[in-house]
Image (cartoon, rainbow, N blue to C red; front, side):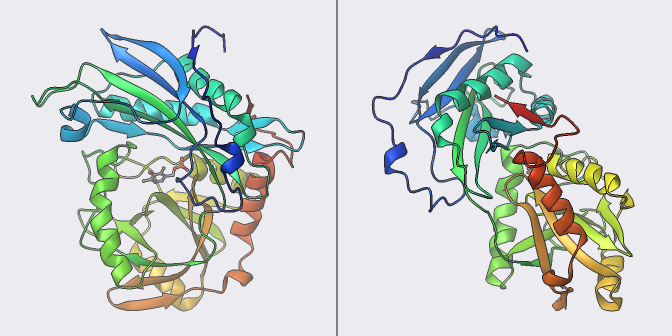
Length: 354
Ligand SMILES: *Cc1c(COP(=O)(O)O)cnc(C)c1O
């Protein structure tokens, strides 16, 4: 990548680093000292700046608030044993960001703006990258529509912001999930494959209902028949069924997860057979009953690999094999973590040292 971007830098006069307790880092709550911002105006990206993290003044008429043109990404930077910092597969997040942008009638972003924005933020806030096991710096690029007018149309101006959030482990227990057969996250012809704000807004009420029933998370099903599983919350879902790794094939209704893709590559490399196809609720429940379903887990950047302990469907709870008996997903998760933290050779060139 060529260093073409002119970035204006304004450093904070007071770093919050010393006041931050790195032993208490709930996901998404603590931000580093700075943020990267850029504007899209007159058909081009401009005003590249590193600023102290903080409020941005804006009109309450901006169209992102009214009509929802807003997309984001999520990726992580890891501290390597030699002290350097590496971002995992950022090229995939860049690609997906522009896929989301195109679907939401938003401008795409040039690779150097996305990548150099991230690199410049990490470099100025490098001391914020944790070095404890299972800790990382979560990076959140977001783009939203800023035209201050109420006509329903694609905005002509946008803001791109990158935030950084030091974070610790996400979930630490096996989840009790509910297969959702009324509400849906996505539908054919919709925006399920885009990482766009409204997909998360629509999931919050169903999630709250499931929590009231004692579940930790949902498994979404297809909107047409509710017979096939799609995702688990904001993560992809995978099963070990008859010793094969089985996962729903991605399409219009399923987000194409970077962690999902990575795990498929690693599983194949480890000699595990992988099936990407439609996965029916019936075969999952049957597998839970007859023991051929030995593992179930959710995969995503925020949560990495999270074990599913039990599955609720139609008022019945299916308890899966004890997490301590599972071998395949923990082995893949270890391999993935070792690469990300620089403890194993990066044979696929996934680590981008910034
Ligand atoms: C972000 C996300 C995932 C996981 O994607 P990763 O690239 O692995 O982080 C899966 N499903 C949904 C709906 C998501 O928003």
